Every structure is written in C-alpha cells, then in structure tokens.
Length: 224
Ligand SMILES: [Zn+2]
Image 1: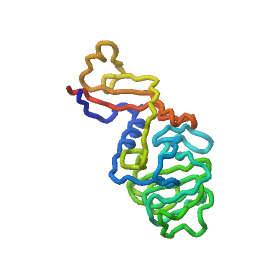
Image 2: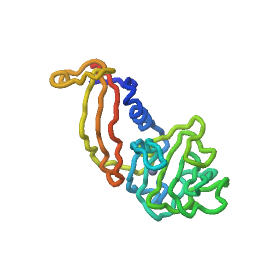
Image 3: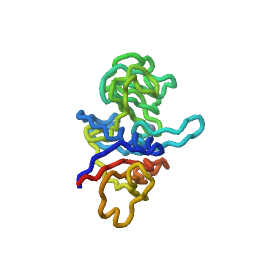
Image 4: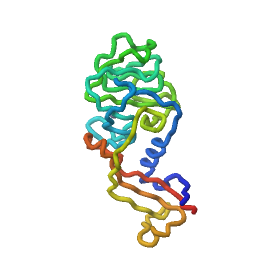
C-alpha cells in the first residue's frame, strides 16, 4: 500500500498535526549525550511534543524537548559555543542546544565560549534538553528568530539511542478526509481515497510524568 501524507484539514486537530510535523524533522549529524557516560544510553522520562495542560501560571503547551532522567549529575555541552544563561539561572543555551533545570551554573559563564568538556552545572530532578535548527543567540526558553525545535531522539540525534518500548494504542479511527464520517467494517478493509487517521496512543516511557503524547492526527491518501 502506498500512501501520501497531506496536511490535516481539521482545525480541531491542527495543533497535534503540527506536533507530528515537528517530530518528523530529520538531521544527519549524530551527537553524544550531555551527561556521563557520554557514549551510553540514558533513561528518557519525557519526549518532544507531549501535551502539557495548563498548570498554575504555565499555559497549556507542547513539551519542546526531551527529559533525561538523571538527577544530580554534571551536564556537559553537546557542542562548543557561547553560553547564554537565562534570567532564572537554571538554564543555559549553547550552540543549537538548550539545557534546563540546572543547579550550580558556573558564575561568569554567561557570554563566554565553553567547550564540551566543561561542566555547565548539575541536573536537578532531571535534565531538560532542547534542540533548535539554528544557533541560540540569547538565553531564556524562547527560540531564536526563524528557529524550530527538533526532536533529539530522531535518527541522527542523541546517539546511542535504541527504543524498544512498544506504544500503547488506546484507540484508532479513520475518517473520510475533511469530514466526520468514520470508516468502519468493509470500508476499512478496502480502504481507498483521502482519509484522516486519528490515533490515541501513549509512550510507556513517559508514564512517570503522567503526561503522554495523546491523540495525534495525520492525513493520508491511499493511492494503491
Ligand atoms: Zn522538559
């Protein structure tokens, strides 16, 4: 079966379609982990694009990086560059990467060039790692102009990383594209034409956070 992917036509699901689009970005330069062992896999407790509902003063948003579940360990830059420390003193942006939830960021590091062997602080309960497709030019949680978040767990990102966790699929639906007409029975067996695919799935690796990627929508046209 050959499929072509189309933009999701549903306004209601457009936000999650953007999520799928972001996670699909591919790059070619693999890199080591920012905690020791640098060449060794570490536990991931949250993934890119998890939906975070509104909590306190934090508005609802999609998680824009991955969480590495290592507490109280030294953190090292993935690539050398100028360090930009944020105002809260818990985050540093260096090169294409953002490191957050740090204690003990070295005084005076802001605005200086750091190498990959230089510790930039110690992780709190975990390390949040964000990756941008352009170099950061300032501190803080925002993106540089024209920048987009990338998925560090893509092939060609954090290495080594092998994902053996099976997704938990709660429900899957297929609709005639752009409509609320759900296809069932023989219509699913002999699928043809433009359709929307709706899936409610969860990544078991992130169950400790109580957050999950939730429902994602992709629009596919079955052409053969
Ligand atoms: Zn995080």
